[in-house]
Length: 93
Image 1 (cartoon, helix red, strand yellow):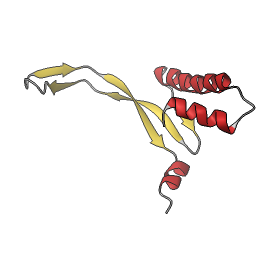
Image 2 (cartoon, helix red, strand yellow; image 1 turned 135 degrees about the horizontal axis):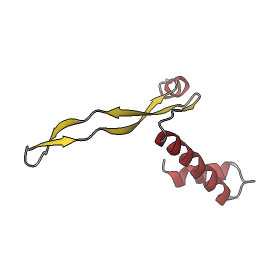
Image 3 (tube, one colour; image 1 turned 90 degrees about the vertical axis):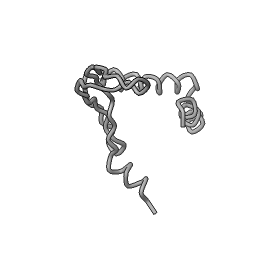
């Protein structure tokens, strides 16, 4: 599912809301999650999962084309851990 499909589904299930309002709500949620992660904070949505930031240490990598050693800088990457409820729903028989 892509963002526009999510917006459409929410709008269809809530006919009392304008499509533009639903779009603004979904965008605000995603922007707030992104902003919190950029600040190094953890975002937990009970039953769904938790977003956090992990740090990958600097390392020596290899250029796949030439085989030459390349310095790869330290970087922060987003990490998602599923919640118990989501895992249980995915593994239902």
